[in-house]
Amino acid sequence: MTDTIASTSTSDSSEESTPNSALLDMDARTVELDRAHVFHSWSAQGALKPLVLAGGLGSKVWDHSGRVYLDFSSQLVNVNIGHQHPAVIKGIIDQANLMATVAPSTANIARGEAAKRIVDRAPDGFNKVFFTNGGADAIENAIRMARLHTGRDKVLSTYRSYHGNTGAAVVATGDWRRIPNEFSRGHVHFFGPYQYRSEFWATTPEQECERALHHLERVLVSEGSASIAAVLIESVPGTAGVLIPPAGYLAGIRALCDKYGILLILDEVMAGFGRTGKWFAFQNHDVTPDLITFAKGVNSGYVPVGGVIISDAIAASFDTTVFPGGLTYSGHPLAMASIIAALDAMEAEDIVGNAERIGRDVLGPGLAALQAKHPIIGDVRGVGVFWALELVTNRDTKEPVAAPIMGRIKAELLARGLLPFLADNRIHVVPPCVVTADEVAQALAIYDEVLSLDLLA
Ligand SMILES: Cc1ncc(COP(=O)(O)O)c(C=O)c1O
Image (cartoon, rainbow, N blue to C red; front, side, top):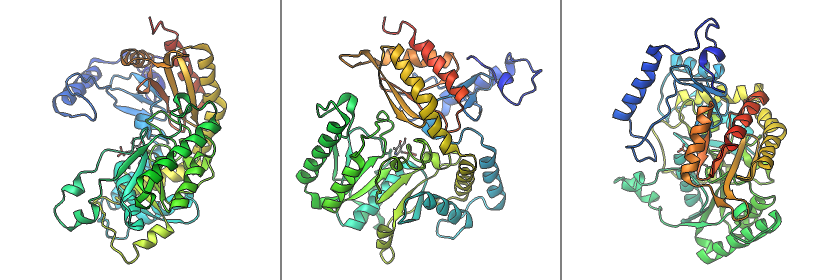
């Protein structure tokens, strides 16, 4: 699929699909400005050649010259509602016309309505939301709450995880706000379940689950369980490889936390708000956490936002004790308006149901068929619109495909009009929750074509 915008967008169909030179100049100018002035995340800056994106609609994005890509990355796995959903755009514009900014200490109707819609989707016993600017600061604040609620320091999380990129600012702070927050010590890691590359020599999901829980309990006890405030895990570790937990694992962690008086924080930043075919990924398992962190899918990133959904017991800890955390833009009205509009539209259009059905009926079987055809696919795992293909040079040794070959795969996918999400030796198949069966069929054909190339030669 090497489409151009003239053939797929609202453009006049008589329009030439060949991009004109002014538009090509826009792409060139975009790259020129970017390379001159923009400092990018997680990169050595010198060799960067960022893809130009100028617009999008639904599951598609395009550059200035009209070259269209199927967005099977959802950008950074956040555009759950698809690009340019008209209701979300309208919600933001209406709020901007009404009141574009307001201090976090005020009461604002958009903030209350957004919080209400979020807690309505959470389990019983969750009635408060603390809004942040994104996912990392949601994690910071969840840890802060857990630590102050329990009076304990340590936080346990898995080696295979990503929880964000902050931490030093409050410890660098000089005033009183530093002191209750000087707890960046005490982070301990453990291994979670990952059947395909089991750390526990497990050959079945049951063994993997049982042994991973045994390992966690050994770590808890060895660390001194009375010093541990929280276990923090992604309900489905995302960036680390879409590691769907085996049945019973999350419930087993809940039981261990209860046994030792430890809080359970579930990070739903990537997995939440529809990606797994449920509002929250943990709703696929029989478990209720103490704190839930969210960002990304709650408003599909139209305005930066995140937050912590707080259980009543923890919220009550701060009824009379000051909560030593805050952000200028906590509950920013444009973000709040985008949450209201996004969640209402997702409900009205059954977008979460679509993600569930696409995963079950189209993506799951389609990716399994690719695995049956291509020996390079060592493992396929996922749910909803949250999948990973693990690429290996040899199915017996499970040797990961090397970075240069992954680079070529990315280039070949882009050349065929598919914007992929690649991490290590994996292709993460993570389209928006609004993706259609037809778009999935187009994407599967592109993956098939690229994986049919002589990649390992
Ligand atoms: C599970 C998880 N938690 C936290 C974060 C951090 O979110 P942000 O980049 O919005 O700070 C991410 C980002 O990808 C994530 O995937």
